[in-house]
Every structure is written in C-alpha cells, then in structure tokens.
Image (tube, rainbow, N blue to C red; front, side, top):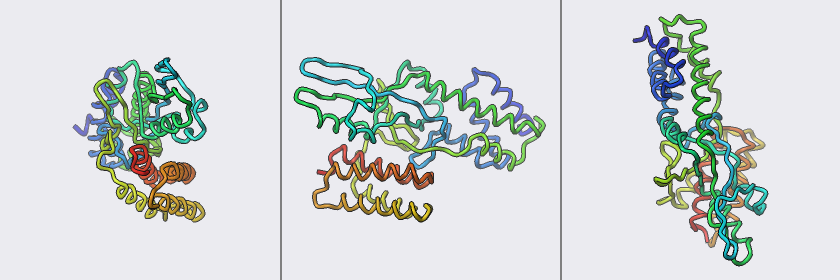
Length: 313
C-alpha cells in the first residue's frame, strides 16, 4: 500500500466527483506512513470537525448577510435584509460580517446542497434585545439571523480540494510516485499550503430539522452553563496572559479585572457586563496570539450567552 498511496491520492484528486472525505482519509494514512502528525491532525479535524479550542483555517470563513423579521403596528415584515448600520450603534460590536464553520467535511457537503442557510448565535440575539429596547411602541424585532447560500459552502469545499491538490503537487515534485516523501517534506508542505488558522466562532446553524451546533464539541444550547464556569474560563485567560507582550499583557489583565468586578457586584448590571465583554473581544483581535484569542473567545462567548439568558439582573 505504501508503494501506491501517493499515486492513488493524486489520481483520485484529479477526479472532481471524488468525495473529499475519502481523500482526507487517504491523507490520514499518508500522515501515518510518513510520520507527519501535522498532516494527520489537519485531515482528522477536517473529517471530524474543529473543536471549541481549535483554530479554524481561513478558508472555512463564510460571508453572511442579516435577515430580519419585524412587527410594526399591524404590519409584519419577513426576511428583510438589514445592514449593521441600520441598527443602533450599541448593537454593532455583536454583529459579524462573516463566521467560521467548524463542522465535519461531510456535514458541509450535505449543507452545500441546500439552496439557503440560516445562522444564529447568542451575540446576534443580544443585538436583537438591545435594538428592541430602543424601538418605539408597537414596534418589535421578532428575529435576526445570518443568511448565506449553499453556493458559499460549495466555494469552501472547492478551496479545500484546491489545498489538497497543491499539497500533493508539492509532495510529488521531488518524490517518485512509488516512494514516500520524508516527514520533514510533508510537514513543510502542510505549513506552506495550510498555514495558520484563524479565530474561532462558536455559532449555530438552524435548519428545518432543528439547530445544529458547528464544531465537534459545540453545543446548541447553554443548558448547565453557570457563572462559575465562565469565571473559570476567565482564569484560563489570565493564566495564558504570559504569552502576550508586556504592554498588551497589562491591558489584558486590566480588562479581565474590570470584567470580574462587574460580574462580582451584588446585583450585576447586564449592560455593563456585556460592554466589558466587548472590550475583551476587541482586545483579543489586537493581541493576535491564536491561543490567547481562542481562550478569550471562549470566555466571551460563555458570558454573552449567560447575559442573553438572564444570568445577570
């Protein structure tokens, strides 16, 4: 098998009808045969989905628009497209232009067959609540959701296939098809073609058959999540602050301390908590250290969901 593995992978890659899952399983085997843990890890995550603490490759990002259902007096409007600028400014930091998809590759292939997709997350729900607070009588935003087309997922799948083609082309450039490339060669090709992953967004897709949490370990609800759980996530952020340069480390520790103070008040103010969570999110973007940004993202997501569900007064 080792003699024909590289040739088999290359030949199947050239067949556009070949499912990506089968190609990725061959990459798992190739990684095992060459001793390349980086190739195995990438192929395994693409097959099984990315977890909450994993960095998601940039090619798994999908651009989204916002659709709204609303009620104004006796008039009900559905599927109205709205821009962030149409919302009160207090909502802006909780609304995204794109999200990252963490599902297994076979799940993405199934979703790509849908004509349209609807996305929702806790931050968007909070933006809806803030917007409603500023509306006049007899006006109400009933639902906000991100929408995208199945063709956007088809584009992501195409990018993954192209990544595989480039990767195998690199491996076969200096290696006979009857031989195996060296581990260092495979690792270098993985690093060059796949690069570093981006930020993590724990988002939920809503479909006709119910909510589906994106990511191997993601959950579609926050049942059982407590404030103490979120505080432990903040503890983790503090523990990882040593990975940040001195100037930003001080700012990070200040932001975490302010957030803790807001939460530990006798009667925490939801708006104040969410505002300080927003500051922590923006700081994560500036820090640019993937592991720290992922830790901040987890804590911020938990606290935002708790706020939306009324954990703070």
